[in-house]
Length: 445
Image 1: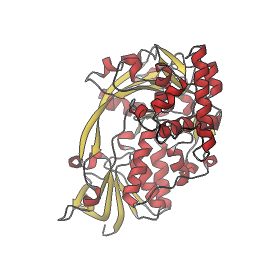
Image 2: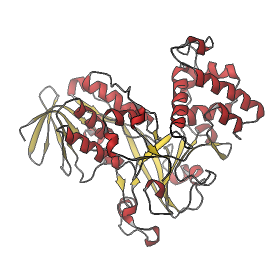
Image 3: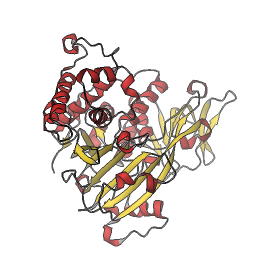
Image 4: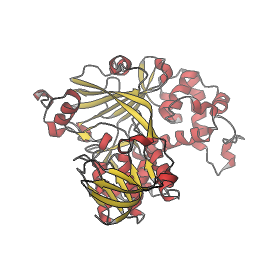
């Protein structure tokens, strides 16, 4: 293996596969290795037998749940915003030709003990039972301002400079109640906490617009899409893409030890006694554990059910966000549901996840508010994993390490990390101005 590569990528998690694809398309010579004999790393997709083995320690799932291979359970499930960053990246790399998407049925929010559809437009605001009559009118006015807001059209700004005005000041102009602010900030703008309220309102408004534009895209009940057969299709699609551009993928490469020169700069990767040389290394935290620090942990419950989440209009696929304030927590909780409609389970079966940033060591207790909303479950697995972020100086050591996946059930934070890593690796910004119509999604089979 005397070849020298521009970049060696370690781990076939979603972030690493996307970066490997982007760098290959840019003309860099990429070698992509994984110590496992399967794609996906921490974000892999498991059949029922694999799921059982991983979380129950044996490989004898219950017969009545159906055929093991009809399950494609994404261990880190995340929906894609139809007009969001990830879809733009997929179009930019033309990997969309290897994937089939389907719209997600519903987007919901938990408020005062109940589940409601997230209203995203002025019309929906008037119809929503989330708000009383007068609040609906106030929310409608605010939604119209957001819909009409165009950065380049000062007439649409109503005299406000959103680079100066905070989100809190903007919202107070419309007199919205705390519960309304809660669902707009967390279920529409998808902010992870309430810090955004004291930051310039521009990003907040742009995030609301992204949601509304994504919702309008497929006329579905949500702004989200998801690949048929689940996210496990993504790493393989990127592997195919990489091959088209002369990249090399190698699974089942034990150890994958990064080699450094006397100055501490990465110069190659050794596996099974052979070293491949490179200028830069891209990897997930598990490959360079001494260059990352633990920043938190995620609690999750994986459930197999025979029905949709109650109160979600029989949605075969749905996201429910439980804002932290509604639960008296420091972080939001997320429900993710997908089913045979996206070919991730046998007919009549649903996969549901409850995830949150862990605030205790007891996921069974901590996730209870979300699990209680699911109704009867056929089977449930609890799990916790640590979250890491890099501490190294990539300019000094040539190592580019992704952050661990967070508890969110949408891709917005993941793709942000990828875009920032791309800029660090290449020294340039990723151009994501693409023709969005290149990615279509089936709304009905």
